[in-house]
Length: 205
Image (cartoon, rainbow, N blue to C red):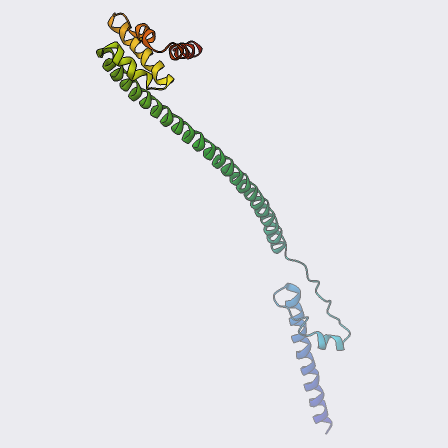
């Protein structure tokens, strides 16, 4: 019986020795950084009064730098967006100003076109009237003076004035004496006086 008890004690001692060697090896590997067994064996180590210090979570430097970089980029994008918004507003204001100037120029151009058209129409009317007056003057000069006066006194004063003036002009162009003075002498005195008064008030330009 004593021999069997000695064998049992040896077995227990050997088992404890093996366990100790295993734990010691694991702790050694943990110390060397080859394995991380302290946290796993913390329940067992706590039985022997060996606490495992809690790891302090340290922020990873690359992550912080990346976050700061993203923040800087975001702020730069916001500034760029504000600059683009301001530029867009300035462009819109400039476009509105250019449009207003363009409309003003278009109105002025149209006004000039209308004025030129009106001037051309007046010139055309003047040329037509001048041609008609020359024709009438030629017809009257070709008539006997009495017949010419009968025609003239039926016209209004302005037409008589225009015919007398164009007749004087034609006579000057051809180097002949004008017959207008003779026509006026044949007209009724009051009518001739009125025509001459109007001619003096508005002389030929």
